Length: 359
Image 1 (cartoon, rainbow, N blue to C red):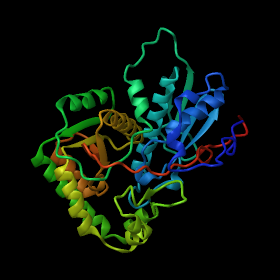
Image 2: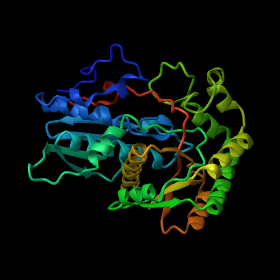
Image 3: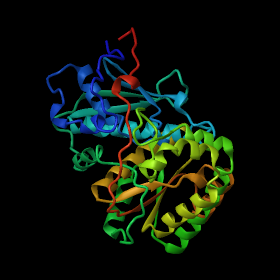
Image 4: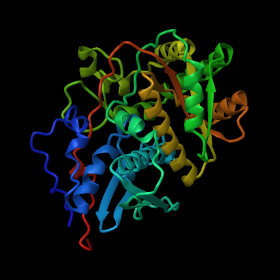
């Protein structure tokens, strides 16, 4: 039986240990449970809103059950758990990729009820057939899992090559969600205006600021989640008071100007769209991670600008502006950057495992 203390966390460094997972240590000759636990070390490196890491997993004799952890929901920024479920979808994508990398066939069966007591997905794992066609992209995507990070620094003005944009569009093929890539400066400026408007509206709400502040950490945090000051672009000194300033000060005008410039100056914007339903949110999260890993492999960087999507009226404006037939779910900028990207803390595996006596 897999228990919450069976993985051990002695000497665990939240900023280092999770990213040092080494594929050469995969337990080819170990038990099925040991192999599943190893795969989960890649799942927990998925992106999540404000690094809330809102997932839990249960290992049993046939595979892995994936749960949403609604205790980590941001009730003001994400009242409908839309971003939470996309985060879980991203973790599922990492599991798919890691399983394929180690020669396992992976079948994902979803429970679209979205309930907290039932798993959102059941991942069945088995040895892949010898004659099964290999996906040539798996190796590249897998190698990017430990390297993918959000970069909030200004990007270079270098354009994104058309060949890279084509590969991103190809990566989105087969998904329920749609992908929009824009390198149109005029259109991107209009999107940036919506980002700035959303910043001003959200920052004016003390409940929103409190919601976000719960996940802001000083650089030398001992917590295993949230965003450090370094990840948010703060100086080490500013990171000490980062949670306080986020909660108390309305910095809407400052943030609006800053984020607008980042959007306008970015070589490209990327939008993932889909319907507002649990299966579509999970699918959008899976597509997001596939795109992020593809971007990372290309030497590019991304960061999120979901603020106008979190404000209903502005979300409608964004949909109309982009001519979408469904709702925008995620908005990111894409480009090149020479500034190193700080890592974010990760929880030890035992914190995301559920123990069942029936195992």
